[in-house]
Length: 161
Figure 1 (tube, rainbow, N blue to C red):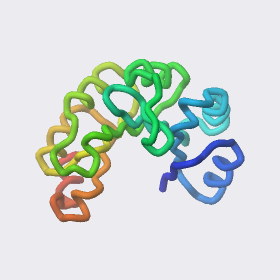
Figure 2: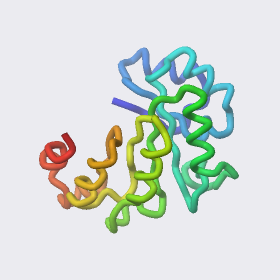
Figure 3: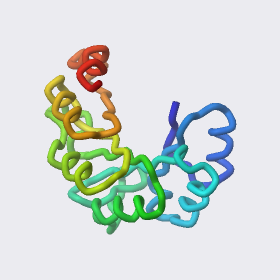
Figure 4: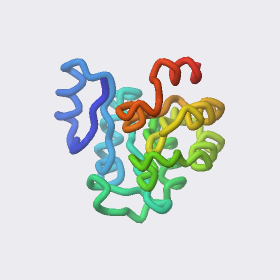
C-alpha cells in the first residue's frame, strides 16, 4: 500500500508509515520543499517515493494545476543525487486518454537514471505493457485500462515477469 497527495510534513509521513502504509509518495513537496524531502529520506529511505508528474517536459505540481520551472530530466537527476530510489512518473497528457503511453519518455528515463521508475499515464493495452516490460522499469500503473477491461491484470503481470 502506498499513499500520496497533500503530504507536507514529517509527522504525516510518520503517521502513514506507522499505520502500515508501505510507501509514501511526495509530489509538490519534493519540488517546493527540498529540506522536507531530505528529512523524509533520512528517516525513511526507500519508503519515500517521488511523484514526477510531467506536462510538456516540466514537472507539474499542486494536483496538476500548476507547472513548475523544473525540467523533467534535471529534476530526476536531482532526485537521484538526493538518494531517492523510486519515482512514479506520469505523463499528464496521456493519463486516462486510452491512447497509449509515452514509450520514448520511459525509455529515456530508464537509460539515463538508475532510479526505480514506475511508468504512469496512458498504459492502455497489452502492447503498452509488453513494450514497457522490455525497458527495465520497476513497474507500471494500470488504471482506466483495468477498469474498462482493456487490460487483463493477470496477463499483464505474466507478460511483465
